[in-house]
Image (cartoon, rainbow, N blue to C red; front, side, top):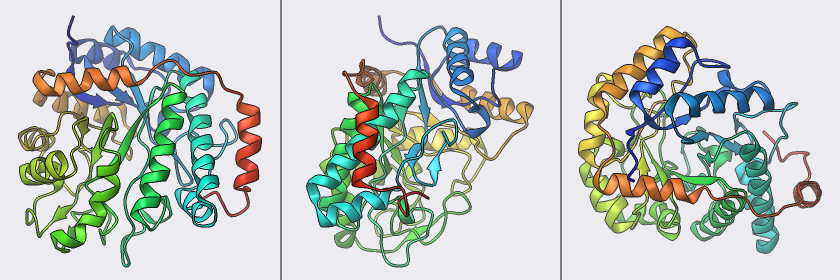
Length: 348
């Protein structure tokens, strides 16, 4: 039987579902959910919340998180272990490519071990953005390396580590955020580089075009589609992401709440769907009021159709990418990771 779900990934306001959220999720049937810091206190609490979500929706949907390591880590010490920032793997890879690949694999296998045990089966990682001189620090040390081949190698190892731990990865921010000179959380960045220069930005995504999922960049590439955020651009999605890069997995938006996108939420949903995005992501990471969060989820879900056609097929493949984990020794893996990248200077 085909999946019946709203083409959205929504969120929750706290450590457990409110009565309003429980009723809403049962009616809206989002394909997935994403947990932000406001919903993460302890292992037992997160596991209970995930079970609540599954019960409300009526199936074991994918639950997402942003767990890259470094400064983008929703699960934080002391309850959860810390992991190196992205650039630490690139620095090691520059000295010893094999050690760099091993370190990032182990780190993501360990992350997956933590995530799988609490019911989180999808991670918005790895970052494949190529950093550029003058680029905004919103990417900064999250970038895995400064060379396309190294990013692709490290990204591949990260995805494999997650997959071996039962967690599906999401490559981001396609087709490349590294040249942006401003933060898309606050405004629409414009990239003026020509298509020839942008080939380097696209290359890591092309190398990992078989990833199960990718997240768009809320960036305007003015040499391709002037003034249009990639998330809302048919030209960028069809000509660049789907054709030139060759990505045919599930394409989700970055958070629709970000200020790089203009108009009301319903207009953003319509624009992203028309452009060719498969899945609407609403994380609302800066909000805390349950009523406001629920109202914005209602607006998003009401504007979003159920999955169908190619989007449904991609969603079903993404669901299947979260397979049961392989046998693993977390203590030995952590010991080896700490040998490869000592904690001093490696963490955000």
